[in-house]
Image 1 (tube, rainbow, N blue to C red):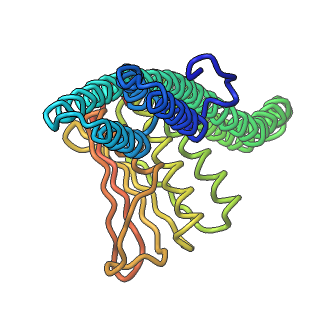
Image 2: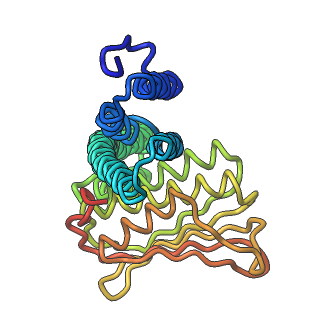
Length: 358
């Protein structure tokens, strides 16, 4: 009866009621038909079932009721106290053993459930880690593309400058050279003067072409500076405050990793200034000293020395990248108000180590 019942009736209340009904019916049967042995045989089963299937508060209370009821029945049938004690102890030991077995079974089930939950959490964390790595890789690729676009934009500007300056001067040279034969026939002194003017314009064109060629060469430092200049111009137009970029002359060769790191840090710093600093002026200095590359970003925002500076996720990530590259990133308040961000990295950054682990 306790095993073969509908699933909908297998709850604590129905099981407790079923055990009590069976036990009371058995007591009445034993009382009327003098079959005390049957009740004690069934009591072992009822106590074991109670300990295994019911919670501790219900099973202990029900077990005590069964023990007291059986002892009372034995006492009414004039059993010896020793016999009553033996029966009661046997029932108590049965309850304790079954209860211990239930605790062990529940412990195994809990361990299995916790293990499955940990496996599920581990799978979710692994998936999230993979997504984070994919996002990081996409961000790296987007940064490289952005730097390439910045270089193309700067080259387009340089080509327009060449067209406007060198093109006009070459047109002037052509016109003067076309008029030179007539001037030589009419006035030799005026022709010599025109020739000197043409030579001076040619020298200026040559100097300007050399400058542009130097900027557009394969020098990685030049490309990095072009990207930084384009970023500064873009932020200046968008934010409306003054930004002055002052790179050191004759910068050494920068690796692509160095250029990317400088670009990312400057981008994050300028973004934070727009969001939080309420600044009107920003200075960006790039210096090279003792095989170290320094970039200093200083604003005249509202931060003061008495204010606490707590870098957000972006700058914290940039600081971690700088440290993995063998450098450092520090943030300090300046007098009378404002903030200074100082980046220091080696000039020959080859690879930012620890990116995958991070």
